[in-house]
Amino acid sequence: MEVRNNWPVQRGLHLNRLPWWAYALFIPGVYLFGWVLHLIGVIPG
Image (cartoon, rainbow, N blue to C red; front, side):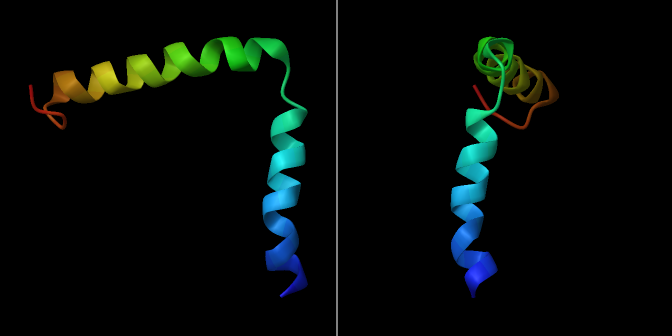
């Protein structure tokens, strides 16, 4: 139980350790990932 309760906190601390360029690449990465899914046909429209 303790490990499960501490997991979100540990994940939050891990996200806080990311460098600035990780945040800069995150949004374009999500956009490109959605674009690739659209090309494959997973996302209609």
